[in-house]
Length: 487
Image (tube, rainbow, N blue to C red; front, side, top):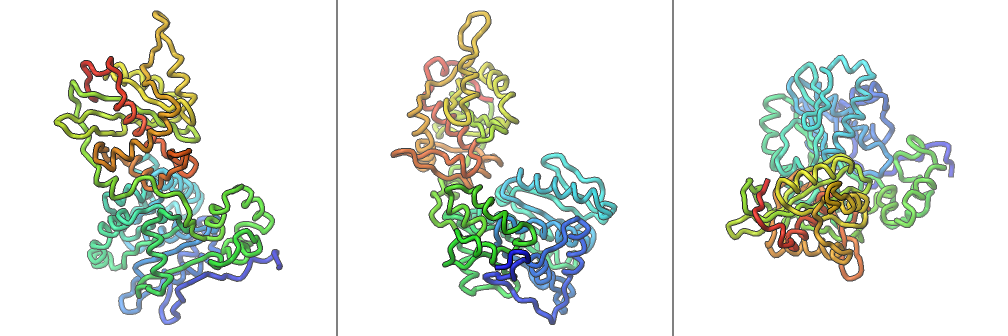
């Protein structure tokens, strides 16, 4: 096979271009070029179709795009150039880019802003806002492009003229429903107000066994049940092909020869080591149907939500700590006796950068509320746990931190106890963006007859902190019960 030229595009399915309708794709392509990332053939194919203009209305024909494509194909590139074009259709338009988490969306937005600032297009907007929670690119016509977390937005609804939902594989059915419920009822109003048909994009690499919404959606589309105003593009190797054959990967990858060379494929494969399913999913766009099951069902998580507990003296409390696998942040949670006979409640207290600020913050919480701290002595929390365990008072030489007596065997059984308590409605949790994001993708890892949070698959630091807080609460020593107050 000739590897000096990109292979011919071979999508598994692609909505055909309707030559009877004009397309706005050329203008989107121009914006992409000005942003420093000219569209490659598969991107232009998708853009030309989703940008088709309905001759009866003079606005977009399609109201929805469903796109599934491999990693390293440039999926995010087409969303950014299309976002810009969409924002310039008229004044006061609302465009959203929603990634798997708010952090992912913010990171993508920062990268986009770097390109934006280097181009002549920057004259079309005011200076970008980059503060977390209020990030936005506001155009001089009043339109806005904003990032957000899909899992968080799904709980509140997002209204806009264009909503790009990326990494759809991580959404539960309920979260996808919430997004639709928040967006679709406003489309008629926005169409009348702006004269431009609103659109929602669902883009993602194939998912795993836990991809509740996306799996069902793809199965339906692949069966031929495609709504008239839905554009569907499905890239990947044939479902019966061998993903370990690099020639096959090269032949069916739309980024091949444009974004990487054939010689790089072996290096990409080595990055996955013994994770054959992960490789097939990332570069073949083959669903990983054998992935470990989702740890907490979305309905269970929704059913066990409760309000945060207000400050009140005399309630028992324990703090739990979770450190991310890369130690970039430390999460502190609390499990609190909610009073009035209701089940205890867990809620997030802090999400601290790194681990350096954690000792001082934990000491302040311990002293203020007279509550102990529960932390896993192994894994990502081990270094921080050692600091807490070995710090002693310079006056009395007594330990400074009051740690619960958690053994290695307790840490193994704690996650299962936490989920069992939720299932039996013996525990509730307060709504929190970080925890709500993590629970959507958190999976299990077998450990003997028990299971642990699968840290390698996703960040579960918030769930670990909640787990530690609950275990510590159920094992509170006598000295922590007297005259406790809740924050």
